[in-house]
Image (tube, rainbow, N blue to C red):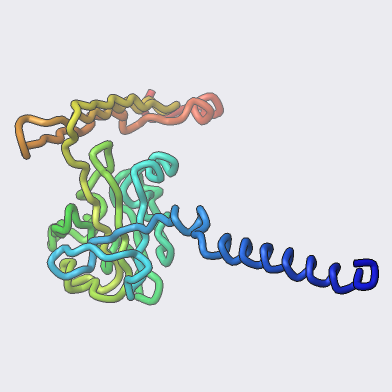
Length: 237
């Protein structure tokens, strides 16, 4: 025993190394929490027959906005919400209507000649005789919107009204098992008064309902209070 201390030390080190190597291999084989908690978005715009695909598998550019993200943006109009989609230049200074929307790579100047607004996959067709009535003026954002999918390129012209630039698909909320509702009131310093409401629930087996909308009032000549204090005269007084 006293003659071979080096051999004993080497054998003990080899045994301990074998145990530690097995432990490391066992830990490496177990999935990490980050791998098991991967969440992938599913898109339906631009897919044949409305079949859903994973956003990472889509071969075209698509931007998704959930209802929580829409609330954080707090858009003043439908065109104002489109500012969150990359590749767009939006001028929404005219209020809720009469916006100018240009898509990157397409010649523009006014209105929204290359943009389609759709609801649950159904495109909204604007009046062809009014040049100032662009597509976003025909649709309003309220609490009934579940998410927005903005598609640029790819099969965009096929699933829109022929516009090759952008298709925005507003997907509405659906009925829920439990009866739920929401009421929201909005005001501003230029006398805007708006009330939003949403109600979802279940009527019977496989029959659900969702109803909602908004009502608003805003004087045409309303001016912010800070501007009224500086103005010496106003045509609205």
